[in-house]
Length: 145
Image (cartoon, rainbow, N blue to C red; front, side):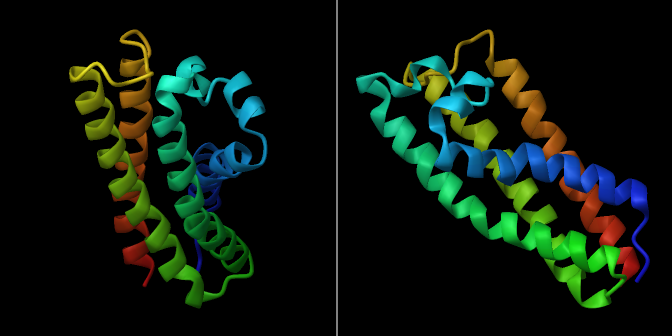
């Protein structure tokens, strides 16, 4: 198996912006908010449900945090058995990106979202990039099988 270095670099970038940032949220939620990955309102009492939901998503994201580590290390060692881990991560990007966009739009339409209307387009673009890379990664990795 020969994964191109440019693909690995992009994969690692998305991995840092995705599941690694969720690990930061679990370990240091205030720092996660300070660097702009969490809305200011998230810690307000009326949005406690939103914070708990975000925490649950972050815990679930640890599965593809580990899968990403396995994929990157295996790719650097040129072992073919790690491709399914990369495919899993790319599939999660697609699912998570679409789910997040729908969630933010529905919460916003019902005035339940702590995400400001100004910030929403930034989040949507951020998640669209995950979806696009997820599809690209699936096709790229599938071609390596």
